[in-house]
Image 1 (cartoon, rainbow, N blue to C red):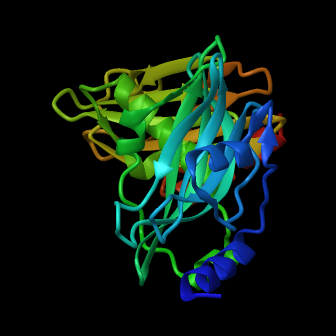
Image 2 (tube, helix red, strand yellow):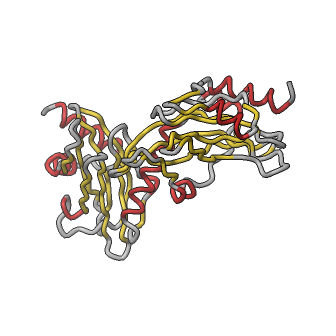
Length: 310
């Protein structure tokens, strides 16, 4: 076994996910043979849709693995290239497809695929690849989102052992980008973005107007509010912190901001299991009036107590 195969075997032991060679009528092994490629022993995660399958291969004349997806098209299989080395080069290498998941962005059904990209002998990265499925069944690669997902940090072997896959991070990146693109004139506060299982919470700032816009997106529903709803005539001079709390079968999102007079104000929102979104003004006032806004931890604890009394 050469060094490349040994390294791949180690990484794939960490990943530990396999995919079938045939999905929804798509015969991966047959397609690889038709291209004159060699199957690569790297494992690929199963896909969320039956008409989509991972492809791990080494192209003819190459000595490093590439990867992609094979979709069942109207006229036959359609290959979607994820990563392949330059002709005659040893890098980049697609070592594995770790995981995949389906999620919604607005009205579109998306698939995110997580894969390992070895750029050099000592540099391996975890990347995400996005595509969405049309009503006709056709898959369309989201090139803009793939570019916007950006450079990831180098991942170590020990990190792979601890966490072979982080597909939730891929979904979070896509949802953050989706909201950012919806409000191009506002500054998206990445640090305070929260992504939950079924909903997300984002804060966008208008520095000149002294306005904070709160966006709660639950997939099928979205609501926006500004700080005026919680503090009439008060500007959002600075946004301080955000957090999430699960209680009473709902997700509660909290945002803390400072007014011009430096007083700290609280915005509270809830999302129930039916994706109904509500601004909880009375809860926010109860916590604020109780003087429990010195920091987010204290405010969260006070909110928890208020909810337990309900």
